[in-house]
Length: 393
Image (cartoon, rainbow, N blue to C red; front, top):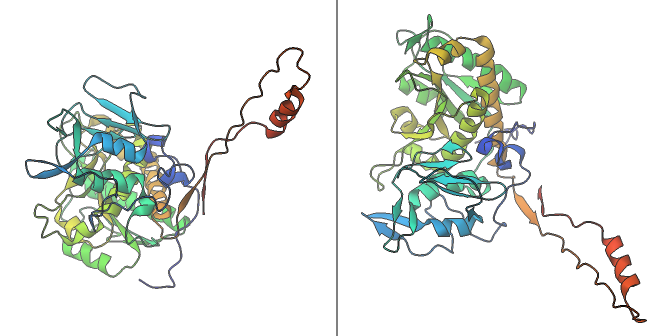
């Protein structure tokens, strides 16, 4: 890291995190749930837990926490939002969290998050979520300013997947290697205009090994890494998806990339929210994967599936310059949001709400000592009470 690197650009990012329902990472204006200093950070790197956590409930060797505890921690209520059968809907004015109906189903702001362990219940029937999923997914997304070891992001490494003899999937007379390169070039020009430095792992049709891609990232400080791809599967599947490195199978021997689990969570969510909004479709959302490329990178890194070339309608969109431009714009919004929210100098404070004055009481009839006149002046001068305001320092 060099001291001369500029701070990330301060251009206004578009809406997208939590599918336009939460503005913390995009607008930096109105979503800090817990006042600074009231709880400890919860990150995978140090496994720190909030002081208020009760002892874990162990299910088949996996530590779990009560969903009721999660609700108390983030000030969520149940029953405030409509939910489908078998789904527990939680939330407040800023957050929408759904658990179920399947044991591995969780949606935050409408974006699916792949759970590492299924939801469970304790002997009393209370719903449980694994401590790992709380720490690895929810907390970095909801409280990015509590992520440890944050640093400014001044450079974006764009990795156009495949290339040369490795063409990837084929669709609509084009190939994955062609589409990813075109999006990478569109993205580079937009990011440079936004004030970022950009490095491409390839800027032409030639083969690049995974080791070469990793070596490129090692030489760049204060950077994030985006590997661009086009998905291919069942013809019915469609929509963008963002993959982050999966939790280590052996907790005692994590991969180098697992050191960035917390920032990877925030980055993948920012990008998936922006891409889903641009594509007007939510696919599988944010997922885990044991990709060797991601496991070797020591900076925030994600694997971005821009869409499905195997879907007849989406394939036509992916070969369209206009649609590729929309995807590039969305990626810029997500990157800018992540860079701003995880910058070390970004902090949030909560301004206490102004107390609401009590309405004046009507004086009793024929009471000469009535305080009506005085109470009326007090009410008129107080004006309307403002609700809680949050501001950025």
